[in-house]
Every structure is written in C-alpha cells, then in structure tokens.
Length: 483
Image (cartoon, rainbow, N blue to C red; front, side, top):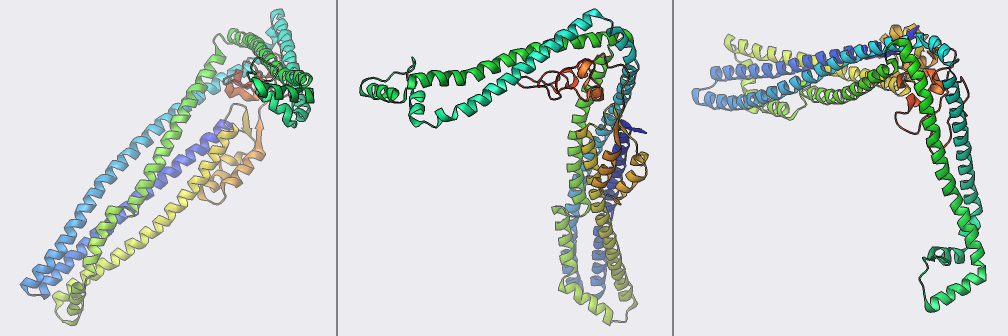
C-alpha cells in the first residue's frame, strides 16, 4: 500500500525527469538551428568561391561585397541572439537550481513531519487513557458540548427569524404606501417634514393604519438582527470553550511525547506551505523561460528570422542562380568541385531541417505530457491526497500507470480516475477520546477528524471549530466522534 505523500513525491519526481528531457531536447534543437545557419554561411562562402572562379574581377568583387554584407549582418544578429540565449539559459538554470533546492528542503520537512505524525498516532492510546479519567477534561468537554449546543440552537433560531422576516415581510414590502412612509421615517424622530406634506402623510398613515403596521414591521425586521448578534456571541463562546478543550489534548500529547509534538507538526506544515508557494512561483518562471528558450531553439525569435532572411535572400538571388547554371554548363573540374560543395551544403541543411522538425514535434508532445502530469499533481494537492492519512491500494500508480502517463499512453484524467478509486484514508489509533472532532489537531492530520466541523476562522484547530454565524457542517458535537 502506498502513502499519499509517497505517491505524490513519485509523480513530482517524474515531472522533474520530464522537464529535464524537455530542456535537453530544447538544447538539441538550438544546436541544430545554429548548425543550419553555419551551413548556410559556408554555402555563401562556396558561392563566393564560385563567383571568383567564373566572373571577372570587378563582377566577383561586387558579388562578394553583397554576400559579405549579408553574412556580416546575419552574424551580428546571431551573435546578439546567442547572448540573449545565454542570459535566458542562465536565468532558467538559476530558477531550476532554486526549485530543486526547495524541493529537497520540502522533502526533508515532509520526512520530519511524517515522523512526528506517526509518533503522534502511536501515542494516541496513551493520551486517550490519560484524558478519559481526567475530571477536568471531562468537565471541559461537557461545558464545550453545552456551549456548542447553545450556539447551534441560537444559529437555528437566527435562521428561522430571518426566514420569518422574508416570508411575513412580503405583505409590507408590497404595500407602496407603507413603504413610502417607512422610508421617510414617519412616526420616528427621523421624520422632519412640515406643513402640507406632514398633513398628507398623516392622512395616508391613518388610511392604512400605519402606526400598528410600523410597530409590527419594526419587530419583524429587528428580531433577526438581534438573533444574529446573539448567535454570533454564542458562536464565540463555543469557540473559546472548544479552544480550552483542545488545549487538554495538546497538553496531554506534549506530556506523552516529551515535546510539543502538535506545535512541531504545525510548524513543519507552515514551512511546507510557504515552500509550496515559492515552488509554484518558480514553476511559473521556469515555464515562461522554457517557452522563450523553445522559441529560440526553434528559430522562431525575431533575430534568427532576420538573420535567416539576410542569408536566404542572397543565396536565392538571380546572380547566384546564373552562377550555378554556368558552372554546370562548363566542364571545368574546379567548377564541379565548388558546385558539389554547394550541393552538399544544401543537402545537409535539408537533413538538419528535417531533424529540427522531428524534434519540434517531439517537443510539443513532451509539452502535452507535461501538462497532463501537472494537472494530476494539481488535483492531488487540491484534494489533499498528499496528507498524512491518505493511502492508495493500487501500487501501479507509481510504476506501470505512471510510466504510461509519462509516455502519453494514458491521459491525466485516466490516471486520476484510477487514483481516486484506490484512495483510502488510514484509520488512526486511539479510542476517540482526545482531539474530539479534530479540535486541536494540526492541519496536516485531517484524517483524524473527517467528520469534524469546518471552522469559519482561518487556522482554527486544523479545520475544527465553530463556524460563526452559522451551524456545524457535520451535525452536533458528540463525545468521542472525532474519527
């Protein structure tokens, strides 16, 4: 059986391997692209040799000047391009080095956290044994249960009063005369109208018996607000009581471990969370730099295209075509050698160009496979499948299936479906006494309290706690239902 962290770590390792393969392919395409321009330059030199052999001195000089000018401009652009490529490559190298360092640090923290979490799991029986006979803990648990029950009842009443306001207030809201007087504040200290307007409003109020209606409506709209404030206060009290209860479990675990084990796990998790955020930023930088280098390696950047254009225009000019035809028509062996050189260069350019096209297609395929792998990693993290309690019964997730995903034989969706079917959560130890409903547990050990309520406050007891202004997401607090 695989743990969630082992599985996720293996997938991330495969992602790193795929990135390295992609980077090596990008370098190969770049070398091939440079080779094409070098061959084209050497082809230009061969044309100049042919011109010197076939033309008179003045005509050859003119042709050489034109070819030299094109070659110089192409070389200037390529040199500038090579400098830019080196800068991007160095930035990519630094980003990848930093990412690898953070991944190594994350792995170290993961291992330390695993040890601490496993130690905590092993101590749960001892902690439960201590707390189940602790009168102070039992009294606090009862106080917490009562506070939570009161908070839930208050939240229910607040919702009911709000529903009453919505249903019973419709008749008032539908009466335009009542709404008119209500919005003016008639019958209150806020009403400041005088003279004829006041007289007319008084007449309208008598017509619809506004005074009685206003009192009823004021009570109808005021009760939900008061009940909501009361529910909020009850929720705060329940949360305080639950924090007190959590301290008993945490302290008992500290005594059993001889160190603040829960605090250590939370510290590891916070550091891992920060590293994950840093890695995500670095991944974005690496993707951006890799994309830019892919353009360079494929000759899609502006400088390379300009350089290629300068050389190709010269090589495709009418004068050079005339030289080519004239060389073929003459029996001179010197002409034939030069023509053969030109032909060889052309064939080699075509061969390297074919290799570049093949490598570009492979590069696009690797990009697609990397995207599939990245989607799986994203799903793992969003579902919390890398947490302490996650396990997978399908060992092929890190062998055959992962290999097929990396090769592109299956999609990320196919892999994820298999992962979800084999996902399980390990059953923690203990007798369900300590850390009721997950209260006081570190965030990374969510499996201890799968039925526990979600906190409305950030960082609330690893997901336990009362949701302010609302109700518990998983029903009422019950003794020992934390697992």
